[in-house]
Length: 442
Image (cartoon, rainbow, N blue to C red; front, top):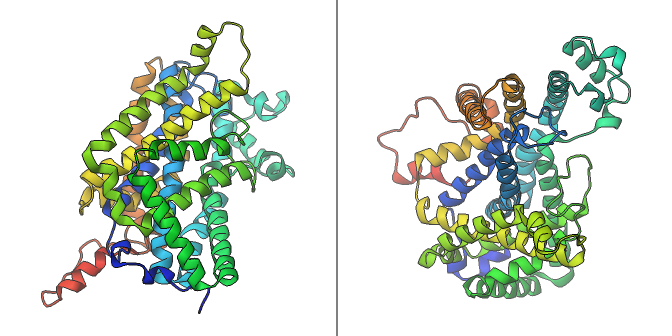
C-alpha cells in the first residue's frame, strides 16, 4: 500500500466529509487574515513601538491592548484553519497533488512576495524613520541623513551587507512556517505508515480521534488545551508568543503553531464535532471569557505590582500569566469557531468573497498601511480618527486592487486556485451537479 494512501476512507461515514465545502471555515480564514490588516494598522499608535516605521505622536495604550489581545489568538487560529484545510486537501487529492498545490499556493507566493515586498518595505521604513527623525536607529551615518529619502533607500538596498545585516521575512514569515510544518507533517506521516504499517497506523489515528472527541465533548476541554499549551509558551523569549520574522528556523513557534495545525488536522477528521462548539451557546461564554482574560493579561504587570509591591517577576508569575494567556487563546479560538459555525455555515456571497480576497489582501497590505500611517503621523488629530481613516482608505483600496487586478487574472488563479470571470456563463442545459461542482473545495 502507498505510504500516503487515504486510510481515512476506512473510517465510518460520519467521520468523513466528502466534497462538502466548509463555508464557516472559509469565512473564519478570511476573518483571521483581514484581522491582520487591522492589527498592523494599529502598530504606529502603540506607545514606544520604535521597531515600526513610525510612532504616531498621538499613540495611545488602547491600541497596545488591542494588539496584545489579537496576538493571543490570531496566528494560532490561522494555523489551526491551515491544518483543517491541509487534511481536507491531502485526503481529497492525494500526496502528489497536495505537494504541487502547496508549492504553487504557498511556496511561490512566499518567494515572489518577499522579493518584491522586502525592498519596498525597506524603503518605506527609511521614509518613516526620516519623517520621525530616527535615521540613527537604522544605522544611517549622520553625514548622509540630509540626503533625499530615495537616495538613502537606493544606497541601503545596494549596500553589500544589506541582506545579512537586516534580514527580515516581514509579515510573510507565516508562509515560511507553513512550509516547514507541511514538510514535517508529510515526513512524519510517511515514516509512521511505513514503520507501523497501514493497519496499525489506522488504529492509532482512530484512537487519537476517539480521544479528541472525548476532549471536545468533555467539560474539561477548557483545561486540557491550555495545560498542553503552557509548556510550549514557556519556550518563548518573551512572555507571550515571539514573532519569528528574522530567522529561518525558530523551534518554539514551530512547535506551538504545529500543535495548533495538528488540532485543525484532527478537527477535519471529525467534522461532525464542529457542532459542539456552537451547542448551547458555548461560543458566547468562550468569547466573553477570552475577552475578559485578554483585558486582565494586559494589566497583569500593573496588577502584580499592586498586589506584591517591590516583588520581582519570577517563575510563579510567568506560570500564572502564561496559564491565562493559553486560556484566552483557546477560549477565543473555540468561541470564534462556534460563532462562525452558528452564523456562517451556509453559502454566503459576502464571506465567500472575503475568503477569496483575504489571501492577496494580507500579502499586499503592509506597504499601503504603513505608507498611510507615515502620511497622517504629523496630523494633529486624535489617534482613533487617524486609525479609522487608515482602515477606511487601505481596505477599499486593497479590495479594489484584488477585484480589478487579481480576481479574474492568472494571479487570481495562482493565489486562489481558480479565476472568477466577470460574467459567469451558466448553460441552461447544465445538470445541477455541474453548477454545484464550482462550490467544491479546491
